[in-house]
Image (cartoon, rainbow, N blue to C red; front, side):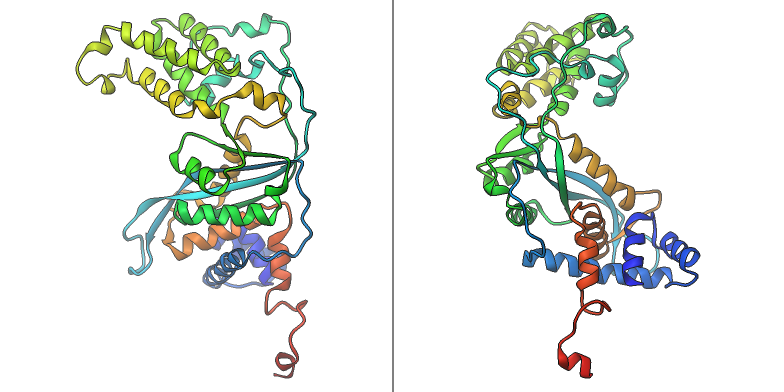
Length: 377
């Protein structure tokens, strides 16, 4: 029953829905309050178990080991307040993905030197940039088919989610990576976006991993820069294609120089407080972002070595976690309630069956052999 409660709660949207589902499926079950207490108890147990770094299964050294992390958002409330929502706040969650991947053959030539079709479609790129699409017809439909970079394929993924600060979360990430034998892999990759704490964790905990800036985040800045650079949508789309193709081919310094030249030549940029000018800010942001991350943007080399270049799986993981922890009028007690549901949700999303393994082995399980004194009692 406990295992059923935790698995259902990890997937359904609320404790109330979990109680109703269990009642309808099994004909009986605990109340929503009892489920909440179980989640807090087992979530705390999972956090303690993760700190102990125990290993129940034999781990395989990955051909390609990929670690990535990113932040999410969760709504919390004060835990020591009367019933209702008191002290509501948005808190950042820390999330990490660990993927064992197959290893494509290393190539002397770039297997995909041209910008793929997926980044040459107006509607798709605008969706990535989370803004309106330029009102032009994407020319890629008339182009001959372009090669698509395949990259490594996932074999098995595990993940973490926590309310911990970045320093503590870095310790958790390193522990999980060592448990998965990531540091023994020949090809080791750390993928992230531009958040500073991502790269602080990489430099302190994963210094031997190749740092890769997620190409999709670079696309967002390039699209916004093109929109500010040109005056009509056709010219903006052409400019975006030039910038994106250059970055795809590793010409990051040239793109930075071109943006800085445009800024220097712009009359608007010569005014006061240009950082707040909407006509200039996207160009400034793009130049700053590329400068800060250029050491992590050698995409042709990454493709030759058969490494991943986007953090799409990490973005997908955050959406999967958010499906359980974010919603209308959904608040979690800070910090215990929020940490517990994150621990359980992350464990349920791991491909190695760790949540089920733990529930079968934890004290109190009918399948766990007890010491003689416990049996006598």
